[in-house]
Image (cartoon, rainbow over all chains, first blue to last red; front, side, top):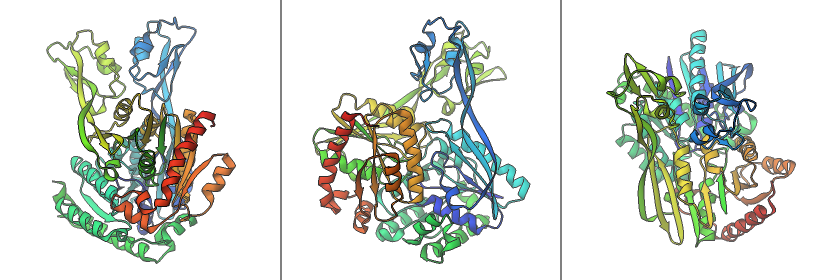
Length: 296
Length: 282
């Protein structure tokens, strides 16, 4: 079994389009949407929700106003300005550190589990889909991503799947680290723009830091062929494995409107390219000297 | 006045709107790049006189000799950042949220406040525009404290434009919090609309006035326009799709260079926002 995480650094380069198509091309896989605060994968992956679960991440203080003597100790100690005069809790600012509860001289504050979102076990034609919705303005996206990946591993045991495919979030912060740590390889989807290139450099640096080998594909490469060429040269220099590029294709938005993975409803240039990219990903993972040599 | 440019979905054109808006207003504008995981403003507005300052956050430092192995710190820590294993105290700095609880609770004075580097603050100038940007250290998980420091660096400025990160969770909230108006940039596709709705919910939680900019307006359908009408949200601007704009963007050039006719619209955008803030519309 191999676990592959799709990343990009920059948002909007086509991670989800590529992931949904990869998922449609594998006969037995577990699919994970790790972009928990703007999840889109379910929208182009026909699925049935089998079960729904609350996600408890961290904790929140509960203040017993009857027991409170208004000494202000909790307000002074809180480093996140999450407690205001009253004392009133600002849920958005609270990190759930528990300092207020621990030091309250009256024992008027207790820490309670914080429900930060909902996660789902769904099924699709060729394997399970594990996805989630983080509550608005909530914390702990990294914890939620780790939970989804653990659930995916359980599903692998149940289904004997060959792959876990993770649609990662943009950026390089907390949920990206949680999506990438310990996976077998990363596929970075970038675009031939100054920002696509810049953000690729940062996400590649993160993958190197986490010791995960990187494969690269350039989406809409023909927007700026010279930039695409510079990105390929950079990837080669950094030891990334180039798995082919994807051209501009109006069929991509059309498939999104239909709610289908691109490869199941199109034989256009982008769908054809993605099929080739997936084949190269498989070849790379199967090559014993590939990923492991790079990781070291 | 502080205007945040946000989006929910990534790649809809936040940086395009933020940079072109700043250039349209010009003198006296401060542009903040709060997408500290992937800052991009500098690629379009190359800063002069750049000054970099390391930004740190508090983590505890252990004096193993003074430690009495009571375990009070590891019991208090909700983030498993400090643990007592076989009479020795172990620190996991990346897990630490800087709450200071361990330092407060230690009865032996064995813990003091040290620091870990979050990233860098970069301050520079592009023509008459002040540029302030945060750059998260690669491998660092926590961006909100760095975002807050970027915003603190712009305190007291007259007009501040904030380029926010994508999403709807804590980094975005850190960028939007305490600002006067949120400009939500979207595109007329299913993903664009879905993530716009999430972003609208987030702005409503914070309770500040907001409006929409539709980018690549003619590339999809009218779903965003219909949603905005139903919800009574003002659409302040529509930017048409153009291959020329995409090619200029790819090279790090501004939208107003590819489409000079948009310059006036960006100038008018600030006035529309000022009016909305004064009306206090939600």
